[in-house]
Length: 294
Image (cartoon, rainbow, N blue to C red; front, side):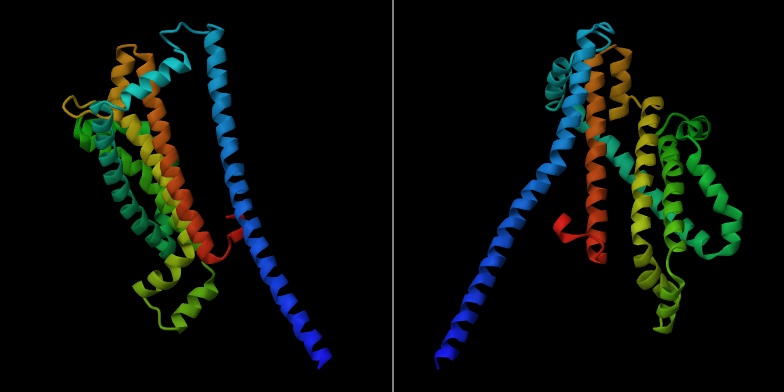
């Protein structure tokens, strides 16, 4: 009886110690999450501080006149005022609408073209190299043709945005499909996946990481093309971020010009964060993301 009591007591102590260990581990995990958040934040804050410091130092050295290169404090003060103007939000609305419409069409064209080239040998032989050549072609080179075809209009901007983004999306799809294991495709066919179902349930999920990478690169090309287009094609009755950038340059309003550039940079960072979150979710679902390092 005494030995049974000792065994029972030992088991209880072990269970309690095990629960304590889990609680301590949970606290350590919470602490480590805060540490990881700090580890992810301080390099960005340090880089920003360094950039602003170099900017301020350059201003103090009087490398350029203040009207050409204003001080950071002047620009950030103008940016703060700019945030409360209708011009900023109207411009963002116009630019955002153009970006989303152009990117949506580019995604549709790129997905269809990429899947076709990836799975049809004749299309790959005919268009494979051409897609890469189109991707490497500077977007600005399309604008003379776009202006000849559509004059100074939104259609010209839309034309260049689609041509700038679609090849990147298509290449992402092609590379993703190329790296789908043939064994996986055969397994899907053996389970009855044919035609569109094979793409929907087998090929597309397997190629998804590369497709997301292609979408991210496609967005970068679309955004650059759009900014170039709005600088070249200024439509008087429709304000946009690019048009306001042109007006600030024409009137030598350097604080406003740099404030608009900061807005453009922030939009790019926000979109990059969205794509980063999507990529992390995909990797977590695939089991290739360490939860402890999340």
